[in-house]
Length: 285
Image (cartoon, rainbow, N blue to C red; front, side, top):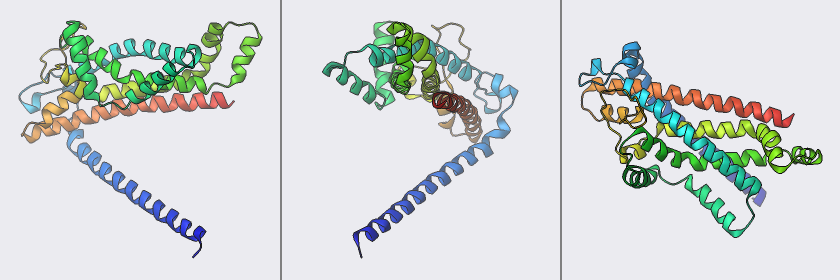
């Protein structure tokens, strides 16, 4: 048997193993999603979305959870988007190519893989204790902003790299300054890629639980937040609270809340895919 024949056999075996592993994952995921849909769809109604938490499962709702998630998403967006995009622009367009900048770039890329609970500990020390923000929406938003900041920086840099050099050359040829080139030419061309990174980062922030638990987010909040300094809860924490209770009715509530969270995540990721495809078509054109 020749080496080429052996390599083809190995390739086929590897393809078979990969397909088999993928099918196992899809089947298990389909089973879990099907079980969640079976339990939770009948529980979703207007009262469930508009009711406060309760010790009685049939009266419990997710009003405080989804309103808290909305507050967190808004303030996380307001904090992280300007910082992330500005940092990406500086590193890609203005930063000097030195050993220090290379070390900084490597660390930023590595920070995207740090466990989220580490950011929770950082947020607990800086925002809750040193800045005296307590277990407030601002503390949670700042902590999640730290968590997703590397994602936006990396996405911004990759989007800027993908802009054709001819756009820069044409802008400089017409006498534009570097900032005018970046602001009026490069950023609009890279907008779709940057927006994709922003939406994916915010989608991750929506589903995070560990950092918020560490900084002291509550599992039971009997009121909707009215200011950034209020205490809060979010959908993932509410789901965790319900799923840990022994009554089956609370498990059904948790399944319904999971469906709502999945819908929010799918919508945000669908928006990201749409703008990414639109941006790619614009760049190719």
